[in-house]
Length: 196
Image (cartoon, rainbow, N blue to C red; front, side, top):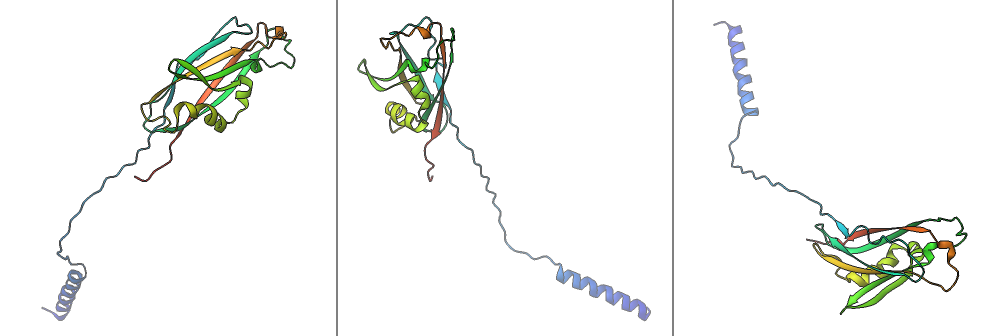
């Protein structure tokens, strides 16, 4: 074999040896475990039953109406606070209300039933209720009902409300034929986060 061939064979063997040394395999022990993790957020689901709390016709000054409803926590997280937002609109049938606000003549009494005796938790008018902040409503109205435990998951609280068309002893003819549409929006807030 010629010297050229020997040099090529020697160089090829050298290159192969270097490749085996540099890219060689090593034997060692190993073990692998896979950890699968998941984060799922809870839900707040406050329901009111019935959704229409009051619907009356042919009211006159001095009339009163008792209504009850339930707030239920149908979610997976406890509810700490329930805020109540009040809004209303008036249809002035005769157009002669002037500065008079029908909402100032409808009184709302939030009642607590204890031993079949209704105790007034808070009394206000629809007009005043619409001006209250959610925090004030929680403090004066909602909190006395459900207490410091709030609304735990799967709990239901019964509420009683009395609506009064206040007879102020004066001429209230401007309200004849008028209607007031009341909207209550209940908003629930979670309890504080915790380390678990």
